[in-house]
Image 1 (cartoon, rainbow, N blue to C red):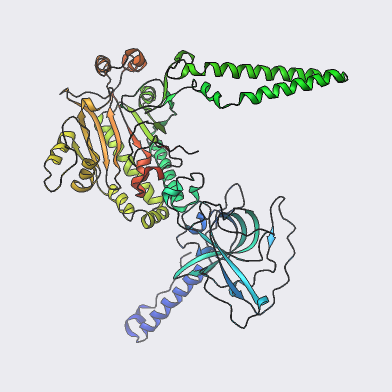
Image 2: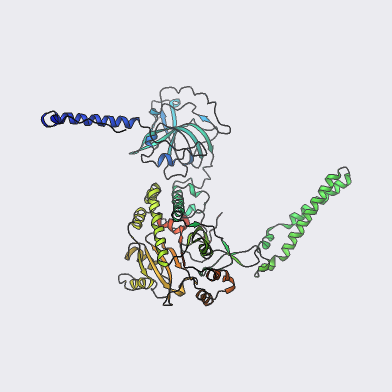
Length: 632
């Protein structure tokens, strides 16, 4: 409700010498009323997780005031302990008698209260730097240990400090780094160095998940990202990896929101396929035939010994003659064991058949199939019925590259749009990238600030730059001309017509020449897949690439207009040496209701690399798959 401040009479304003004093008094009164109204307003409530009584730390720490406005509220929080510090505290007054446990303790929770109960909040030292020592005059029994824990539940990049008495612990167990903990307490304001923060005074421990500090891999303060790759199941607890994961999640959700607003339909595409996409990449073959060779690791003699033991038991049962039901059951069990031995023996005999030779007719699918290198061709079939479709999923390449940007399993956003030409789909790809950057800047501010401090100081400026002006667009021929005119530096590879631009060429165009994302289009026909639409000059095709600046990302998006002319696509398949019968279904899209269509693919992992500035794509994906690395 607005505060009404009455104005003084006009005569008074013009004639009285006390006008300044009255004006000042009125202003002070109005300010006092506003301050009182502000004090009477309750702070915005803390959101509790819908499916438990726990409050996620993000709802406390990601507030504009860093949680200070919710001080005094009682909450239940949980997380994993990232650090533990202790300091001695002295209190001359005896501890009060511990209160009785509440009657409403939920079944199954470990419920520990202060014994003795924590002294008044105002008497507890804050900061958690382990500084203060007890006065020399204090006796041993006057000394108490105050424990400061930093916990994180993965909802944000900030830690919450817990303050608790050392007497608050489960018997025989010490809460330390690596533990999970669920506690109840009261939030209060505190100082950490020069920063005003909020911390939790723990009143109850509801649960502790133990961890052996001696063997816990993340016990050391700052493990390297390289070290963390050896522990992919634990590394999400490291704040940097958690922050990257949240940014990746934000990007995925923003993709769905972007396409959803346009009415473009999300469809799931297969990852097992019998066709090649024409990208010239090595593929992973999928087969069950090699399972037979695995039987060599089975100790067949163990199974044979078990059969002999069962025979001996049957003989004893027969001599006893009193338990016919047990004898029948034992004989049935023996028969099954003998059958299993025969199967294993047969498999061992035939295992060598598949060494150096694969009988595809006996394989699971009866033909050669591979992990997909792109969902584009399958996606086109749905675009030719639903007009606009997209998918987000993994693609696989078995290339020998050791580049830090190449993974064996990559996640791709792929889009296909009917009734769309090259320029249209280039506009769509640019809008998508700008929309993703807007989304991160608007909703992932704290994680971006963390990435700016810990990973790449320019990451926020880079995202802001992408959203500030349109992308530059040049033809492939123009790109070669620019590169060949460079005099102040030399490239390891020459920019020659008919070859792909190298990483150093891409970096120069985006980082040095344009200082902006660059769309390069109209590539030579021979370096693009067979399904890209040919141009009138018969030398180039309607393909494009978007080169991202900074972070050594290189090509972030690849796209093209697809060939809709049946005679042209049929001829092109023959030119590249692909079997027509394998792509007859694809040519049906041109036979029956052919339509102009275009699409593109965005490498989600590279988008994460660009957004965060992280140097290796293996740290941008939850479980990296690269040559020589497929842990878990």
